[in-house]
Length: 240
Image 1 (cartoon, one colour):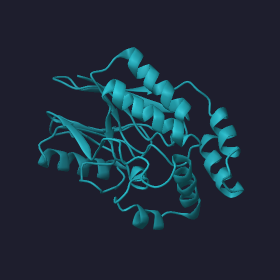
Image 2 (cartoon, one colour):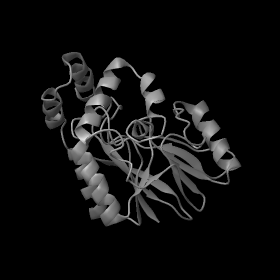
Image 3 (cartoon, helix red, strand yellow):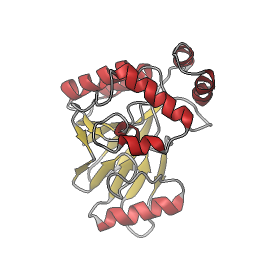
Image 4 (cartoon, helix red, strand yellow):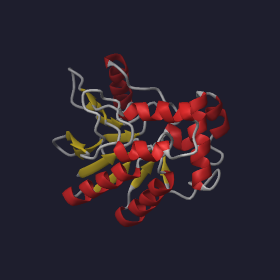
C-alpha cells in the first residue's frame, strides 16, 4: 500500500496545492492529511477548500491535530487557546475570522487516528487523543515504539514536530517516524516544505518529498494581513 502523508499545513495553501499535485502525480492508495490545517499562515480559506476537495476527490483521511482543535466546536478550544502565547492567539483569532467564525470546520470528516494492519497513524504520537506530547529525541521515540508494540502495532507515523525523523528498535521489527511540515518547516538545514510517501506491507519504507517553492509569496501575504506588526514579524521569521 502506498500512502501519501501530508502534515502540518498551517494555512500555506500554495505549498499544500503543490504537495497534493505531487502526490496525485506519483499515485497513492491512501492520502492522509495529518492535521494542523490552520494557524500561522495567510491562506486559511484556500487551505480549507483544498482539504474539502481532497476529501471529495481522493477520499483523504483527515486526522485531527492540536491546532485543529482550536477551530472545532466542543473540542476544548477555549481551554487550549488560553494556554497559547499572545502572538499565536492573535493568529488563531484572525484565522477564525477568515474562516467565517467558530466551528467552520465541524463538517469535515475528522479522525483521531488511522490504522492499517500493523501501522498506526496519528498527528502527534501513539499515546491516545488528545495527548500532544512531542516526539523529540530518542527517549520519546523509544517510548512511542513501546506503546505501539503494546497496542499491537509495529510502525507508527506522526507529524507535530515539523521535522523528518526516524527510530527503529534494535530488538524487533518496526519503527517510529515523524514527517516534516508542509506549511512551517523547522529543519534549518533545508527550509523547504515537505511531505512523505510511505510504502506499507511486507517491506516498509518512508521517503521525503520536497516542495520546490519559495516562501516569498507566503511572506508577502502575511505582511498584507491585518495582524499586528510584532505577530507578522514573528510569523515571517519561520521562513527567513
